[in-house]
Image 1: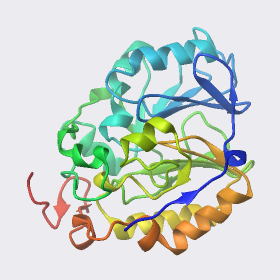
Image 2 (image 1 turned 180 degrees about the horizontal axis):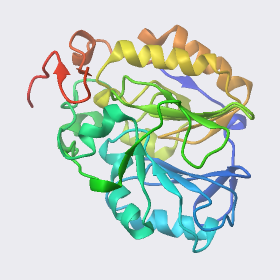
Image 3 (image 1 turned 135 degrees about the horizontal axis):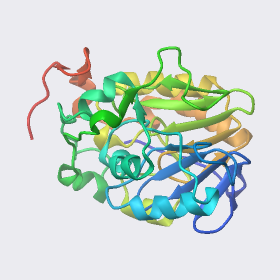
Length: 297
C-alpha cells in the first residue's frame, strides 16, 4: 500500500495577502481553489501584460481566478496562460480567461491533442488510492477540450514566455506532456502534479489540507515508470520552495529530504500496489496515439 511523507507545520510557507491569495515570493503567489492551485507569476501591481497565470482550475473557477488576479494586479491582463497539463482541474477556465484577457495559452506539444479537440485522456484507474476521489474518478471529464487558436506550444529551448529566469522541465507520467516550472536563482519549483503535498485520492485529506509529500494523483497517472523518473528529476534540483498543483506550498530542509526519500522509495510511497497503468502504460508516442491501446471505460 502506498504511504506518505508527513511535513510539519514549519515547512508550510506563504503570506496571506487577502482574497485567498498567498504570496510566496515578491513575484510569485497562488490561490487555492476547491481541488487545485493556480499560480500568479509577476510582482503585485504588475502592469498590463506584466504577469503570467499558471493553470486555470476547474470549469467554474473563472470568477475566483479573475477576482484573485484583480486583487494582486488590479486591472492589468496577463501576457500568457501556461498550462502544466490539460486535466480537467487545470484547464477548466483556460479558454474563458484567455478570451476575457485576449491572451495565448501555452502547453507542451504532447498535451496539444487533449487541448485542440482531437483526443480525450486515457480512462482513470478508480481501483487505486482507496479514497473517495479515486472511486468517483470515472465521473471526471477527460475531454476532448479545444482551446482553438489560443493554444501555443512551449518553446523547445525550455524557456517560458514572458518569464525571465524560469524554464519548463518535462515531467511526464501523470500525463504525457506534463511540465514543471523551475527558477534556479532562488530554487523555486512549481511541480504541478508530478509531486503533490496532499493525499489527493482522499476527499478528507483534500478538505483538511493535511500536508504530506506524495507522488502524482494515482487515479489519473498513466505511466508509473515515467512518473518515478520525474520524481527523481525534481528531487535532484534540491528546491528551497515547492508549490504543487494540490496542497499547500512548503519550503526548507524537510522538503528536500522528503523529495529525496520519495524518489528513492517511490514504489512504496507513491505507487499503488496494482495499478493498471504500471503494466499497461498509456504513452502517446506521437502526441496523439496511445501505445499500447488503452482499454475503454
